[in-house]
Image 1: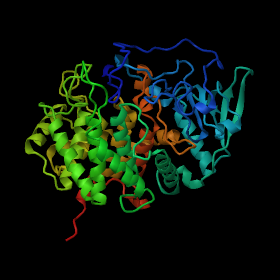
Image 2: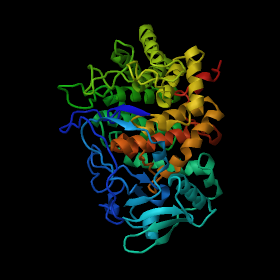
Image 3: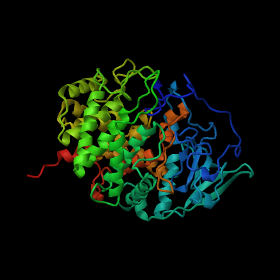
Image 4: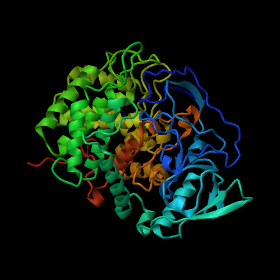
Length: 532
């Protein structure tokens, strides 16, 4: 079945000198092994051309976990981020999400395990642990990494083809041995190791003003990144008054408070390029969770201001757009991923004492529920061709919005609950940002019940293992949509976004390990009995 995807991503619509009205990406001619225009090792993580602050020129590559290498399908030209908007029709190919059976190494982490073991740019990895890849490379690679990290095997043995040699050679890549706990990366010492490294990297990359380097969507995108990093530190136990990242949380909150309602995604003129609803919604979610954890008068004032602003930004239809100002360059207005995030922000403000305007909530509910086919899955919008196309990310965001708005017993909430339980493993069925689907699905599934959480992780653990890198970051990956479109919004947005999102999901249901997660966002805080 062919689906029509509108735009490159939620973050990608912006003014640009080059506008590609239509693009269909096909297979590139075969390139001989070793003839890749491979970047130097110092070009980690995006490739030789990936230095642009806006993310242009970055390569969409498979990260090979703690090995410290990135690769691509040698049968495809490297997908490179570019300017402009794209509107394409693509053929779904779920098999692409398992990874190719041959991986052409493009980038090596400087002095990382793979480079120290002798892996070279231009090498083609054809198997692992003595077995060739036959049904995708990603799952067997992830298992080999976990086996090596747990001590069940002595490193990761890669089968490699090189242009200057005949036949295959074996490369043994040694990774740090954590112990048998590594075989269960979602709990205990294994989770703590990955999470601690990621949180430290976020702190290291945070700027003096509390924000992060601007990538896609400029200052507005920086607000989203600061909000996401703040949520990651909160989920792992820090807040305004305690935890190793209390100062980082304070700085992130100050940056978000100062910039969320003033940031514009792109210059005005012609079509509407405003993307600022993303910043205000994420800012409200971060400040709402923060206020629930460590109440502060200044945070509360900004939170209620953001919520009131979100109410004003609602379209007459009841939905929300990328930003106010009418149709964007692709001719549409509302999209329900923003509607769900906006409800989450307003719901958290409600939990802090702000009163949601009754007409705002009534119109939002009518729009969201009207986008569905009735099964509880939230569609892209109510427009023809987009109504009824349920999606785990949109539904999870709306579900968390309803729970924070104290609609947990509502009939529609129950329908969304059922949808999430049935589709918690379908992050790859989303659109635009795979990482956003993983984030929202993971939060909602882990807040619901163990069955939903197990379903989510059964589909996501391999990606978690392969996203990890030697520097503590989590890296994005190609998937069927980005491979077909030749562009990946997670790559353009950068690894702060991906690192923060994976950190949040890892910590989201960590009560057994003493982690608070995000109880306000997911409704767990509201469900707990209040002290008398």
